[in-house]
Image (cartoon, rainbow, N blue to C red; front, top):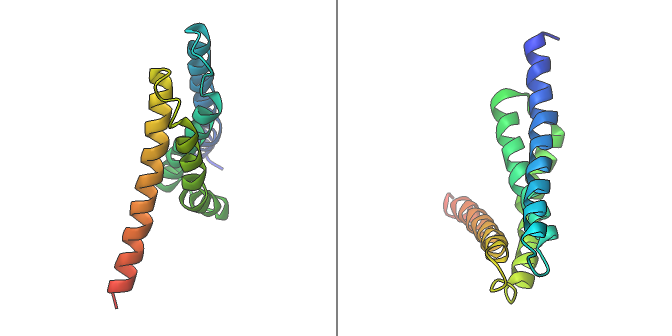
Length: 131
């Protein structure tokens, strides 16, 4: 395998996820130091995983070879993650007044669920009216 392929593989599959984990930990530390009441750590963990998953899908599609694992990732991001983020949005609905972090987690969760719902419904509409 050429060196450029090795560097690409390491960058996509190791460096990008590691940077995501570091960014998440820095955000958690920032919330902890700001003494945010009941900080939304788990909500942000799911959001980082979801948006990071889409970043990995994009990078794999552009710079790597598509695989079955990438397909499973896309299916879970489209079919499972919207329900999880909707549940977090529902849970954060009453807590969004606590801090800007709560409002951000609520907005991102609700926005992702709404965007995926619109995308799936749009795709189904195109498929139905295509005939």
